[in-house]
Image (cartoon, rainbow, N blue to C red; front, side, top):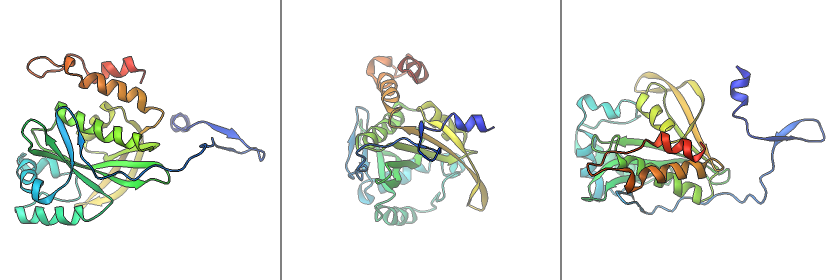
Amino acid sequence: MRAEWEALVQPAERIATGQLVGLPVPDWKGAAFPPHLALPGRHCRVEPLDVDLHGAQLFDALHQMPGGANWTYLSHGPFAALEDWLAWMRASVAQADPQFYAIVDAADGVAIGLCSYLRIAPADGCIEVGFLNFSPRLQRSRLATEAMYLMMRQAFELGYRRYEWKCDAQNAPSVKAALRLGFTFEGLFRQARVNKGRNRDTAWFSILDHEWPARRRALEAWLDDGNFDAQGRQRRSLADFAVEAGQ
């Protein structure tokens, strides 16, 4: 059991006391707090969440699944009325952390998903992506992958050393998405929360800064227009490109 987690421990060195400690981080000055600006891609835009601009569009987009299945693992929602949703949005955008964004289809300008940065810790270089809520139109699409790529790319360009993804351990699609995008499973926090009256075990994943170049190469190769046919179907999987990139 010990060997399993020891494989994830980062390199260390032995000091005069004989103890092992983490390697120095030379000239570390911290990362920058994310500017709340739009992140444009070829097929989507990740835009700062705007209640007036995105509110009604997201209410419609995120309340289409039978039984509100896309809300099951979130701490909020679904919302019975537009006004309830807008009130939640107003309270959310008033905070600096989490920092919320709408995922907008570049083809028609319609908001079809929600995401955020959260647990933003510039001093330690750690940041999480979360509050993910994808409409049926966004799920399992090139736009969804591009949106996550844009969020990752900005985080590492701002100097973050660690990019986190956490989810309910029962949320199989989220676990699968994290692994597909190149995150490493780090462990399970048992009975971490009570969510909507039920126990939640939380699965933790991360990408580190020295891992990002290979993840980036794989994602950019998969997202390239040449990897899709005229019907928008992928020619090769992201897993194929990950192997080539040395993940």
